[in-house]
Length: 161
Image 1: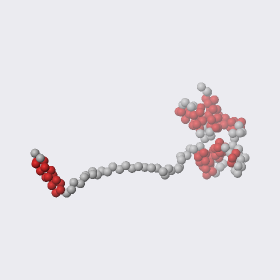
Image 2 (image 1 turned 30 degrees about the horizontal axis):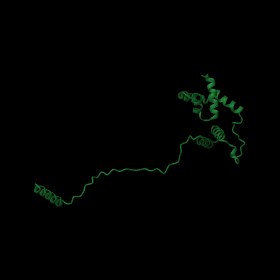
Image 3 (image 1 turned 135 degrees about the vertical axis):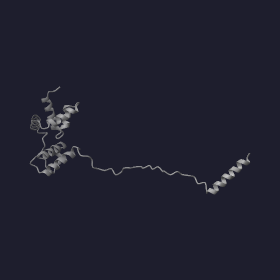
């Protein structure tokens, strides 16, 4: 079992790989214990050692850093990870306007599929089965016709003896 300091460093590296998803980072450190992952995801997100390790990673890995020199007319050089990291940085930058920060956070959530799908399926087929609460009765004619048929049947039975 790793010591707590080594676990924090692993958490920081995982958090750097997927910024903004502290639970996923903690889950990599504690894959078999969700309760510890939840606990440390909240405790370590602002931990000075974790933040220092993330800064160290940024300084030692310039190829992972967001390339701010990408021209808007050539977006082919921008990767999905760059876009995620850039949106996250704008959302957390206190110098940005509030609406820009909210827009960046919404973009971050959309890229990471955090928002529910808004499409509505209009091709829903529903079949309603109704039960008739009416009893179907065969028409045997009028009362007089019915009485005459019974009398004739009775006569035939008496004469048959």
